Length: 240
Picture 1 (spheres, rainbow, N blue to C red):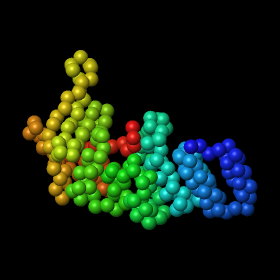
Picture 2 (cartoon, rainbow, N blue to C red):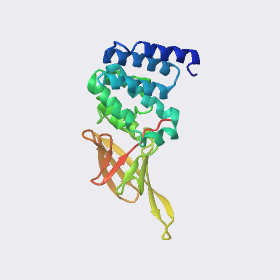
Picture 3 (cartoon, helix red, strand yellow):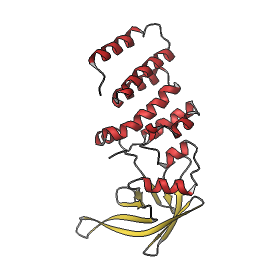
Picture 4 (cartoon, one colour):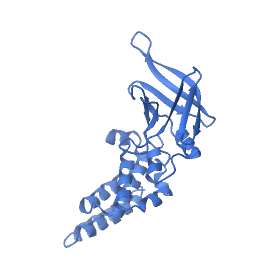
């Protein structure tokens, strides 16, 4: 459902009528209220634009920072491929949630139970942000199997080695390569994984074994690091 033309005129009129004499905090609150009207009509793009205006006025607004994180998460399932074209790898909701928690530590508690974050909930970085025990075996298993694929490997996402974890303990490494004539081919390596005290162990049918876990600190928080060179990431892309 879209906001009606009459309602939009009223919103614009109110927005312009109240500008004079308002403090930045009051303006931010006004933009936030308008954004929540767009939110109620599932117009995530309009809500995002208004919340960004709110943060231009008051960068430390607790409500605007948190609500923007919510809207960015909701856009993941609504815009599909157009969303990815706009911002590339979809880390922005997580970055914004980190900002919301920075200005209001209580936002972590709210986010933990907020359905607006369904699109990014089973990412390691989200769990780190809300203060979850990232070494908990069941949580790690849920994160591993909750993603379609983990992208990367020894040579990065450009040449593959993607991982797929299954509920039954099986894991598949999808390896990209060439057939000798310059044509790209894929082959799968199968194995099983186990989790012990936060450490993930993969034993492939070939006999290869590798261990690792999630990076929980620094700029690479959320990366699945296996061995010294094999770094895997995910893109939280909602319903795509």
